[in-house]
Image (tube, one colour):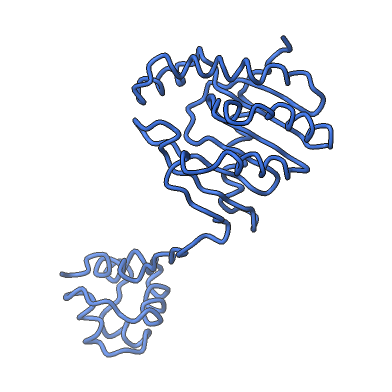
Length: 247
């Protein structure tokens, strides 16, 4: 198949097969095959030809575009769970208990934590008293996004009820030094449980309850990595969230 882009570039610059061949140091028949048969030159030769023509090498020969190799495993990935239900609650609790600087939780409800570990509020108070900044963002039950999630998961008004229950659980922490509780109305793409440089990310899948969706455990190992992506996402949601008053 002819390379019409190359033909047009040569015509625009007044380049003949011979003239370009002399410049690139190949046989004129090679240039002819590039144009008429759509042959792709070696990368080094193509770079010289493209520079001579004032063109992008990948525009002339897309086949030379190299895909960025994917890593088999991210260096930040500690563990991958098929679904949240596979993870003992002690995994969440132990991670939070080890935090010294930051605890961030972004969920709609996640009442499973309080149900399975009634001392959760006490633990968060203890970490805050030790100097840890604790931020909890739960879903606003009046949010259209929360209600939509209930419909998608065939959970109906149950998700709204669980958001209200979560608010009841966390409200006693509002006003505790070092702890902030807010409600958010955003679409929840992932639930995030962060403790310092570790985070458990519960992915959300359309039509699947959170307990049946995958979770990945990340540990920050480099700037701008996966951990930072989720940390930045939390910050963006937090800025939109509404503080919960003591009550």
